[in-house]
Image (cartoon, helix red, strand yellow):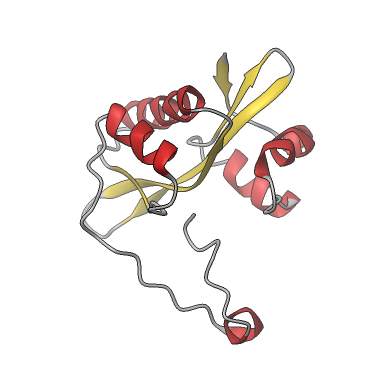
Length: 141
């Protein structure tokens, strides 16, 4: 299994793993430039991806994983390792993501890679027509 930065040509591959929330080309282009986003694949078969970016917090920089998808726990662990290495190589010493408690496989992968889980809770308010429909999924996930 290999983990590599992705490019515009990989949109179909990423969307084969994205499930019910496909990626749009604009998002792919943005995350392809961050230096912290990766595609996991075995040969030509996509197995998962991580979308991450460096975010300046005023005092320090954090690499924020905004979305991670993988077909197995070992894929998730490998993607987490790739993001952590890219952060470290860039001199960024914080990596974070918001975890949906229903994603037990991701929670186990995070713990296996040394992440502390909790106790923070994400509060979300979606504005506009999406908010009027009661949508809250997809915010920092």
